[in-house]
Amino acid sequence: MFVGDSMTIGSTGDFTWRYRMWQHLNAAFDGPYRIVGPRHTLHEPTEGTDTSSAYADPGFPAEARRHLAGWGEGWLHMAPLIGDAVRLHEADTLLVSLGLIDLGFYTNAGQTAENVRRFVAAAREAAPHLRAVLMPVIPNVRAAADAAFGAECARFNELLAKAVADLSTPASPLLLASEPAGWETCRATYDGTHPSEWGEHLLAGAFADAMHQAWGVGGPYTAGSPAVAVPSP
Image 1: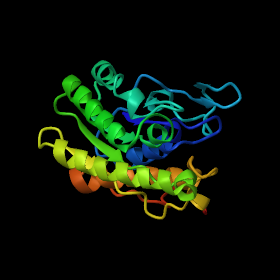
Image 2: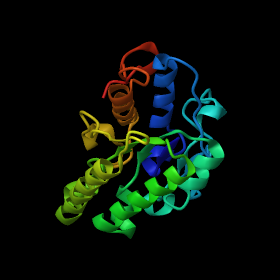
Image 3: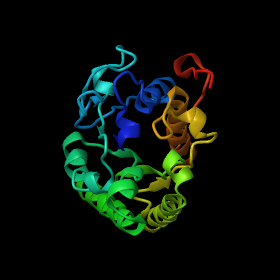
Protein backbone atom coordinates (compact mmCIF):
# COMPACT_ATOMS: atom_id res chain seq x y z
CA MET A 1 0.00 0.00 0.00
CA PHE A 2 1.32 3.43 -1.00
CA VAL A 3 0.75 6.01 1.75
CA GLY A 4 1.55 9.65 1.15
CA ASP A 5 0.73 13.27 0.53
CA SER A 6 0.57 15.31 -2.67
CA MET A 7 3.84 13.85 -3.95
CA THR A 8 2.28 10.38 -3.85
CA ILE A 9 -1.28 10.98 -4.97
CA GLY A 10 -0.15 13.16 -7.89
CA SER A 11 -2.39 15.47 -9.89
CA THR A 12 -4.23 15.37 -13.20
CA GLY A 13 -1.91 14.40 -16.05
CA ASP A 14 0.80 12.83 -13.86
CA PHE A 15 2.18 9.33 -14.20
CA THR A 16 3.02 9.30 -10.41
CA TRP A 17 5.83 7.40 -8.73
CA ARG A 18 3.21 4.77 -7.89
CA TYR A 19 2.94 4.06 -11.60
CA ARG A 20 6.72 3.78 -11.87
CA MET A 21 6.73 1.29 -8.96
CA TRP A 22 4.00 -0.74 -10.63
CA GLN A 23 6.11 -0.92 -13.79
CA HIS A 24 9.13 -1.95 -11.75
CA LEU A 25 7.29 -4.67 -9.83
CA ASN A 26 5.91 -6.12 -13.05
CA ALA A 27 9.45 -6.35 -14.40
CA ALA A 28 11.30 -7.43 -11.25
CA PHE A 29 8.91 -9.13 -8.81
CA ASP A 30 9.18 -12.90 -8.65
CA GLY A 31 5.64 -14.01 -7.94
CA PRO A 32 2.16 -12.56 -7.61
CA TYR A 33 1.50 -9.35 -5.73
CA ARG A 34 -1.34 -6.89 -5.20
CA ILE A 35 -1.38 -3.11 -4.82
CA VAL A 36 -4.08 -2.22 -2.31
CA GLY A 37 -5.70 0.79 -0.70
CA PRO A 38 -9.00 2.61 -0.26
CA ARG A 39 -8.38 5.34 -2.87
CA HIS A 40 -7.52 5.37 -6.57
CA THR A 41 -7.73 8.93 -7.89
CA LEU A 42 -5.44 11.90 -8.52
CA HIS A 43 -5.79 15.48 -7.32
CA GLU A 44 -7.75 17.81 -9.61
CA PRO A 45 -6.18 21.30 -9.22
CA THR A 46 -8.99 23.21 -10.91
CA GLU A 47 -11.50 21.90 -8.38
CA GLY A 48 -9.24 21.44 -5.38
CA THR A 49 -10.46 17.87 -4.93
CA ASP A 50 -8.90 14.41 -5.14
CA THR A 51 -11.31 13.22 -7.82
CA SER A 52 -9.37 12.97 -11.09
CA SER A 53 -8.86 9.73 -13.00
CA ALA A 54 -6.78 11.38 -15.75
CA TYR A 55 -3.48 9.54 -15.35
CA ALA A 56 -0.86 10.26 -18.00
CA ASP A 57 -1.07 6.63 -19.06
CA PRO A 58 -4.76 5.66 -19.44
CA GLY A 59 -3.58 2.05 -19.56
CA PHE A 60 -2.57 2.18 -15.89
CA PRO A 61 -5.00 -0.52 -14.67
CA ALA A 62 -7.60 0.27 -12.03
CA GLU A 63 -6.36 -2.41 -9.64
CA ALA A 64 -2.84 -0.93 -9.68
CA ARG A 65 -4.04 2.64 -8.96
CA ARG A 66 -4.97 1.82 -5.35
CA HIS A 67 -3.40 3.92 -2.59
CA LEU A 68 -3.90 5.82 0.66
CA ALA A 69 -2.64 9.27 -0.28
CA GLY A 70 -4.13 12.73 -0.26
CA TRP A 71 -3.27 16.26 -1.30
CA GLY A 72 -2.48 18.20 1.86
CA GLU A 73 -2.48 15.13 4.14
CA GLY A 74 0.35 14.10 6.43
CA TRP A 75 1.20 11.82 9.36
CA LEU A 76 -1.38 13.75 11.39
CA HIS A 77 -4.13 12.76 8.98
CA MET A 78 -3.02 9.23 8.16
CA ALA A 79 -2.42 7.98 11.70
CA PRO A 80 -6.18 7.73 12.41
CA LEU A 81 -6.86 6.10 9.02
CA ILE A 82 -4.11 3.54 8.65
CA GLY A 83 -5.50 0.85 10.95
CA ASP A 84 -8.77 0.46 9.10
CA ALA A 85 -7.05 0.74 5.73
CA VAL A 86 -4.58 -2.03 6.57
CA ARG A 87 -7.29 -4.24 8.05
CA LEU A 88 -9.86 -3.83 5.30
CA HIS A 89 -7.41 -4.13 2.40
CA GLU A 90 -5.12 -6.74 4.00
CA ALA A 91 -1.94 -4.75 3.43
CA ASP A 92 1.29 -6.40 4.53
CA THR A 93 3.80 -3.83 3.23
CA LEU A 94 3.58 -0.04 3.40
CA LEU A 95 5.59 2.42 1.32
CA VAL A 96 5.22 5.73 3.16
CA SER A 97 6.20 9.24 2.09
CA LEU A 98 4.87 11.83 4.53
CA GLY A 99 6.03 14.74 6.68
CA LEU A 100 6.42 17.85 4.58
CA ILE A 101 2.78 18.88 4.95
CA ASP A 102 2.87 18.27 8.70
CA LEU A 103 5.92 20.46 9.21
CA GLY A 104 4.67 23.11 6.82
CA PHE A 105 1.20 23.57 8.26
CA TYR A 106 0.31 21.48 11.30
CA THR A 107 2.98 20.17 13.68
CA ASN A 108 6.61 20.69 14.66
CA ALA A 109 9.26 18.01 14.31
CA GLY A 110 8.64 16.47 17.71
CA GLN A 111 4.87 16.35 17.30
CA THR A 112 5.22 14.91 13.81
CA ALA A 113 7.51 12.18 15.11
CA GLU A 114 4.89 11.29 17.74
CA ASN A 115 2.35 10.90 14.94
CA VAL A 116 4.75 8.53 13.19
CA ARG A 117 4.70 6.35 16.29
CA ARG A 118 0.90 6.53 16.47
CA PHE A 119 0.73 5.51 12.81
CA VAL A 120 3.02 2.49 13.30
CA ALA A 121 1.14 1.35 16.39
CA ALA A 122 -2.23 1.53 14.62
CA ALA A 123 -0.92 -0.28 11.53
CA ARG A 124 0.55 -3.07 13.67
CA GLU A 125 -2.63 -3.44 15.67
CA ALA A 126 -4.34 -4.23 12.38
CA ALA A 127 -1.51 -6.44 11.06
CA PRO A 128 1.11 -7.50 13.64
CA HIS A 129 3.59 -8.70 11.01
CA LEU A 130 3.35 -5.66 8.80
CA ARG A 131 6.55 -4.23 7.32
CA ALA A 132 7.10 -0.69 6.10
CA VAL A 133 9.56 1.54 4.28
CA LEU A 134 9.51 5.16 5.48
CA MET A 135 10.85 8.01 3.36
CA PRO A 136 12.41 11.03 5.10
CA VAL A 137 11.38 14.54 4.11
CA ILE A 138 13.36 15.13 0.93
CA PRO A 139 14.82 18.44 -0.32
CA ASN A 140 12.23 21.00 -1.35
CA VAL A 141 12.11 24.65 -2.30
CA ARG A 142 10.79 25.92 1.03
CA ALA A 143 13.48 24.18 3.05
CA ALA A 144 16.11 25.67 0.75
CA ALA A 145 14.73 29.20 1.07
CA ASP A 146 13.72 29.20 4.75
CA ALA A 147 16.56 28.25 7.10
CA ALA A 148 14.26 27.71 10.08
CA PHE A 149 11.99 25.41 8.11
CA GLY A 150 14.98 23.58 6.69
CA ALA A 151 16.27 22.99 10.21
CA GLU A 152 12.87 21.65 11.26
CA CYS A 153 12.90 19.22 8.34
CA ALA A 154 16.39 18.06 9.31
CA ARG A 155 15.31 17.63 12.93
CA PHE A 156 12.29 15.58 11.92
CA ASN A 157 14.44 13.34 9.76
CA GLU A 158 16.65 12.67 12.78
CA LEU A 159 13.62 11.81 14.88
CA LEU A 160 12.21 9.62 12.10
CA ALA A 161 15.47 7.66 11.97
CA LYS A 162 15.29 7.20 15.74
CA ALA A 163 11.67 6.05 15.55
CA VAL A 164 12.56 3.48 12.89
CA ALA A 165 15.46 2.20 15.00
CA ASP A 166 13.34 2.07 18.16
CA LEU A 167 10.25 0.47 16.64
CA SER A 168 11.61 -1.99 14.09
CA THR A 169 11.33 -5.63 15.18
CA PRO A 170 12.14 -8.94 13.49
CA ALA A 171 8.41 -9.69 13.32
CA SER A 172 7.50 -6.27 11.94
CA PRO A 173 10.53 -4.66 10.30
CA LEU A 174 10.75 -0.98 9.46
CA LEU A 175 13.19 0.52 6.97
CA LEU A 176 14.30 4.11 6.61
CA ALA A 177 14.63 4.76 2.89
CA SER A 178 17.56 6.81 1.67
CA GLU A 179 16.96 10.19 0.13
CA PRO A 180 16.62 9.47 -3.60
CA ALA A 181 20.05 9.58 -5.17
CA GLY A 182 20.48 12.55 -7.46
CA TRP A 183 17.46 14.43 -6.10
CA GLU A 184 17.89 18.02 -7.21
CA THR A 185 14.77 20.16 -7.01
CA CYS A 186 15.52 21.85 -10.33
CA ARG A 187 15.34 18.50 -12.16
CA ALA A 188 13.46 16.14 -9.87
CA THR A 189 10.46 18.45 -9.33
CA TYR A 190 8.32 20.64 -11.55
CA ASP A 191 7.65 23.26 -8.89
CA GLY A 192 10.28 22.79 -6.19
CA THR A 193 8.27 20.11 -4.37
CA HIS A 194 6.22 17.77 -6.57
CA PRO A 195 8.08 15.17 -8.62
CA SER A 196 8.69 15.56 -12.32
CA GLU A 197 8.80 12.41 -14.44
CA TRP A 198 12.48 12.15 -13.53
CA GLY A 199 11.63 12.61 -9.84
CA GLU A 200 8.94 9.92 -10.03
CA HIS A 201 11.60 7.43 -11.08
CA LEU A 202 13.95 8.58 -8.33
CA LEU A 203 11.28 8.12 -5.65
CA ALA A 204 10.21 4.72 -6.95
CA GLY A 205 13.85 3.68 -7.18
CA ALA A 206 14.57 4.66 -3.57
CA PHE A 207 11.68 2.52 -2.32
CA ALA A 208 12.42 -0.37 -4.66
CA ASP A 209 16.09 -0.50 -3.77
CA ALA A 210 15.35 -0.38 -0.03
CA MET A 211 13.02 -3.38 -0.30
CA HIS A 212 15.40 -5.31 -2.50
CA GLN A 213 18.50 -4.67 -0.39
CA ALA A 214 16.86 -5.37 2.98
CA TRP A 215 14.24 -7.99 2.17
CA GLY A 216 15.18 -9.42 -1.22
CA VAL A 217 11.91 -8.17 -2.70
CA GLY A 218 11.96 -7.72 -6.47
CA GLY A 219 15.25 -6.47 -7.82
CA PRO A 220 17.25 -3.29 -8.17
CA TYR A 221 15.41 -0.44 -9.84
CA THR A 222 16.70 -0.69 -13.41
CA ALA A 223 16.31 2.67 -15.06
CA GLY A 224 16.49 2.40 -18.82
CA SER A 225 14.92 -1.03 -19.24
CA PRO A 226 11.88 -1.11 -21.54
CA ALA A 227 9.51 -1.38 -18.58
CA VAL A 228 10.99 1.50 -16.59
CA ALA A 229 12.57 3.78 -19.16
CA VAL A 230 13.68 7.05 -17.58
CA PRO A 231 13.24 10.26 -19.57
CA SER A 232 16.23 12.50 -20.05
CA PRO A 233 16.45 14.94 -17.09
